[in-house]
Image (cartoon, rainbow, N blue to C red; front, side, top):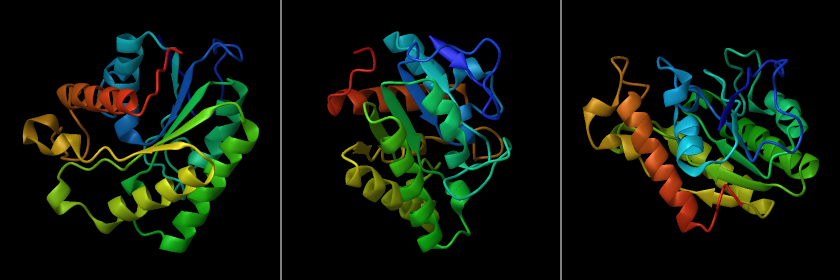
Length: 205
């Protein structure tokens, strides 16, 4: 089941602590920008696995860059912590382009360490940055992914390099060539679900 949570505040109908299995934090790709939220990959993963997922993704945000919710990923942690999930999935973002490598590394490390401190019983899962085409990916895709890998490894979490599941065909991208179509979101859900399983992560357990 997907719980649609506004990144800026816990809504009145938000689940109580301990009822959410997974919290996801990422950017507009994770949020399903341009689509019905029910077609975003966290919603699809919730439907496919039966896990209770609260998607806190914020369009335009990164670890060091504020998005449409008025904050960067770190600013979403109070809401995430209140839900007491068993898994926290963090995905790095190309929205951090233009941020210095040191600033990005520091912000990523601080966010991951805060999750680890505030939710010591949760498993932290880091997912690499998604881009439409592996051959044309800007430097920030690798830099942001590396920063998250280092931070997640340091706290004993699980880092997953997804590759670029959207690079197989242009049909998976919306007209802006930045955000995936519903079909692209399905491909992401399939790829992420398979990667989680391969790393021994059962979101329903």
